[in-house]
Length: 251
Image 1 (spheres, one colour):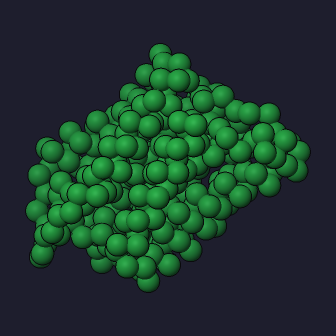
Image 2: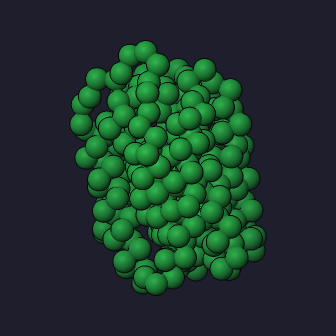
């Protein structure tokens, strides 16, 4: 592996890990297009959509693992929310990882853009957060988790970029609770996709290593900083990342 690839993967991993901790996502919303689009700028041969998806799944798995170790200690952490939604997501993500082989690269990119647009629309819907201890519709959590898991498995993402708007709008949870739980949900749901794509040979280990190193170091730092950032700023950061990713993939 040449030094250009090492530097590129480290930078992508650092940014993805930091963002995953800061706003409770796995970083896939920006990592996937970055892996597709940045290699030529570093003089590195481009990756296929399948390899980019595999590398993204490895980054999501390790960055959310790193962030989850911190998040589960927060008072906002809710085991029922995590168990039911991630239970549906891990099943869906494994199914999605298998289904990804049936689609071409253009279709995978299209799915990614459609889901990102949906997440963006949800981010701008204003709802009042519920006060007090939230009660969850457990079957609904499982069903939504299954659907999001299938989509995230196809793309190689943890699915947190769509989990966050759903928890904010549909379940009316406060932002601090969403961030604390979404990164743990994203970690659990990423397990299936990561294992399947590793078995399928879509994760070049040398490339993934430096991506992972950057992620696991900076995810806890992002999570620590998230406590000091107002909710509306976190929402705008997520929205901007989604917009940037959509523009990159379209153009």
